[in-house]
Structures are given as C-alpha cells and as structure tokens.
Amino acid sequence: MADQTLSFEIDSGDVLAQVKGHVGLLTLNRPKALNALSLPMVRDITRALLAWQSDDNVTMVAMRGMGKSQAFGAFCAGGDIRFFHQAALAGDPQLEDFFTEEYQLNHLIHRYTKPCWVFMDGVVMGGGMGLAQGASLRIATEHTKMAMPETLIGLFPDVGGGYFLSRCTGFLGEYLGLTGQVLNGAQAVYAGLADVLCPSEDLPSLWEQLPQIAADDLPTALKVVCQPYQAATLSAKQTTPAWWNESFNDVFGLEQLSDTLAALTQRHDDASLAALQALNKRSPLMLAVTWSQIRRARHMGLADELRMERNMVRHCFHPLHLGQGPAGSETVEGIRALAIDKDHAPRWSANSVNDISHDMVGPFFDSPWPAHAHPLKALSDL
Image 1 (cartoon, rainbow, N blue to C red):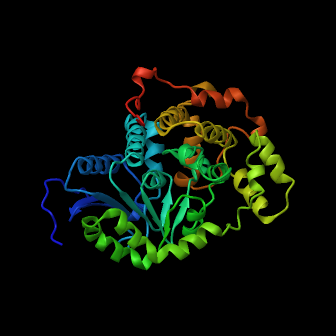
Image 2: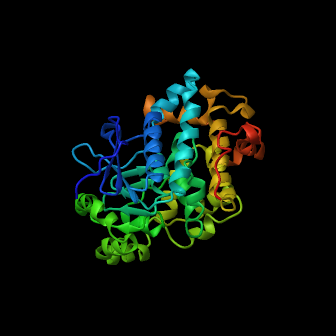
Image 3: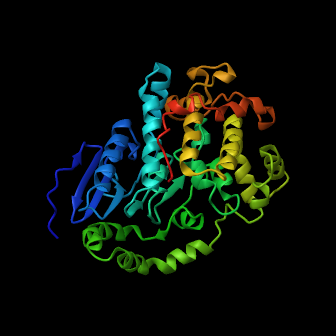
C-alpha cells in the first residue's frame, strides 16, 4: 500500500511519527537510554496523537520502541530520572512542566478516540507503563520486562499507576506498586496489564501489516491478528507466577501497611521472603504514601486520580510539610543512590514504616493549588 502524503510528520531524532496507509506509527527512538522520556519526547508524542485524532485519514495508531540494534527490543524505561535529579536541585521549572505534560499525555492515551496498539517488547517501566496502559491493545512478548519500580527511588507509581494498579484483581496492584516486582510477558497478561502474548519474532511482520489491517474492518482484523496467539495468551492468564499466591490477597489486603509487613515476617515461604526483602530496600515513607495512593485510587476516575498524582509529585520534590527542600527529599536521595552516585545505599528519612505517621503521609495528597489553578484542571473523563 502506498504511503499517504500528509503534512504532519515528526522526525526529531528521539521520536519518529509518520502515517502509512491509514495508520499513525510512533517509534520511540532513544535506544541508548532505553527510550527514557524527555520533555521534548512527551511533547512530540502528544503532538502526533492530537494531530491523528483529528485526522479522518488516520483510523488507528500504534507505538513501539527502538532497540539498540534494531526495531523493538525495548519500549520505554520510564522518565529521565537523571533530568529529574538535576532539575530538582537547580530549581528548573521544566521539571514541573514534565509531570504536567506527561500526565496529560497519559490521560490522552487512556481516552483516545481511535484504536491504539502498543508493542511492549523489552523494558516497559514507569513512564513506559503510562504510555502503554491506556492503549486499546497491549501486546507483550517473551522479552517483556514490566514494572512500576518507583518506590526504589523514593517516588510512587505515577503516570496513572494508582488508577491501573488499583484495578488489578484483588490486591495484586498493591503488591506490584510496593515491591516493584518485574513481570515477564506472560505474567503481564496474568496481571491484566497486557492483552496478548506474542512471540517477539512476529513483531516486525505485524508492524508492517498494520497499514493493511487498518484498511479492513478493524474489529474483524483484530480477531484475525490475535487468533494465532489465543492459546498462549489463555495459558498465561491461567498460570499464577511463582512470586504470587492467592493468600497474598489477604496479606496485601490488610487495613494498614504495617499489618502487611508484620504478616510477611510471620511467613517463611519463598514468595513472602522475596516480597519482604524487596520492601525493606524501599523508602518506608514512600511505601506508606503508595499504599494510601492505591487505596484512594480504587474509588477515583482517571482524571481525578491524575490530579491527585500531580499533587503528590509536587510534594515529592518539595516536601515542605516535612521541613525539607528538594535536596532533602526522598526522591532526590533515591535517584542519587541509584543513578547518580550508584552506591545503592539511600539514606531514607525513616528506618521503618512504624516510624511513619499520618501527618507525614496525609499532606502528600493536599493540592498545592486552588482548584481553578490546578495544572490538570482541564482533564475530564466525560
């Protein structure tokens, strides 16, 4: 099929956007950084999606990431945390812009008016999950490495994480958000965070077929595309990962985070020991904040949940209620330990969740802005 000649196209280096046939194709093209998102990338992706949403010639869109040696192999490792660290310490206003515009993009994808397929090969973490989870078809592979690992850097599972994690079966979302557990493709399907399990070797041909697919009846074409993978996908849905068992619904469903940790210490199975080990590496304060975030998000629509997260991330970098500035924040310290000094020895503000009070957690959810001035005031789910 010949490419349609349209005025809109992006080749910024880090984002490639073009229309073939009737499909808008987006490629994240920052492979050396595992396609970690910068503010210009967020803006380019947003521009492309908005242009295609209003273009009658475009009937669907698809997203993928570029690997280090070829297309696919990595989707998106998240936001550029080195930029977060530098911008926080320098007082760079672009840090505020990044989170506002990234969350607007997350909302756009969740509420996109045309089919959106995402190819989740390789790393899909943090901001990559924000791009992927709102898509109408989420394709995972045997190479998928999916996680929301933010508590390891003194942050919380943002980019709508409270929304999509709280909608996992039972209390699996609390487990994933707190521990940062990495899921392979089959486990992503089990968790309800992927729709299809597809061999990575099939991705290039599927991508090339997209222009023809979009020219046909889309619902029928979708069934045809997914049919060869039905058996593997069904098997993945029915196979419980080794790190999870149904009794965890009781453990992570307890009323208080401290109760969950106490329950884990009384258990001696491998899954409980691994969960406890992961939790002990994380910021006790941000574990408590994340616990409250996911519980609150269970009863919130997407727009309100993203507004809540925007409040939270402001307090993460400006924890004034704790008497700290950016340099003393859990988030800046967590990024320092993981990505700047790489000593993997963060100096958290508390040693245990038992040291965390409601007065330390509650203000993370207070809006720093009046409703009429909130940076995400325009978001709506109507």
